[in-house]
Image (cartoon, rainbow, N blue to C red):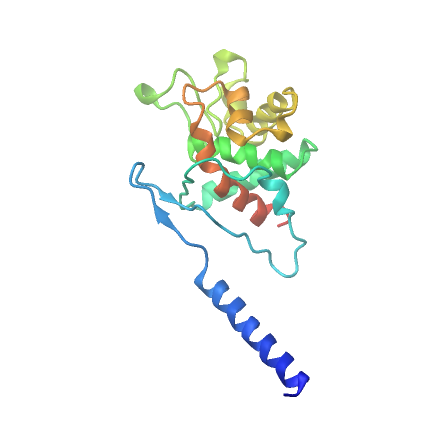
Length: 200
């Protein structure tokens, strides 16, 4: 058989397999315990005209446990972009943005929450549910996405070795939550958001 014909046949088959994989997309399952969509594996695809993000830096240790995901509205996407912008302003990298967005997904589902009355956890407010009485800033400050992100990142930078910690450990060290393991479930969606918006 002619080697050119053989080579073209192999390349055609490989191309079809690749295209089929893209069309199928990532698998999505639903977690029965939380009622929230769970996405164990996801691949962020960059537009051809944008430089890519080093995805190995986003989740250096892999995800921990079942992953949850929510569909974001315009406000939530805007808040994710604000967290990324503040992370860049702080001079930190994509991993810091993943930790920040994962934390905000757990704390507020990326909604800039005001005081929730009887449903409030003390006086917690904003994307990161920071408390004025705990020294995070005024209500006006902690409900400003840039300020609250920079305040969170200031706490993160004070932790030795935060870059090498799993998301849930880094987030918990800053936030001191009653549910320290809850942050882990948002790592994949946070990484996907950073991959999508870091260079946009």
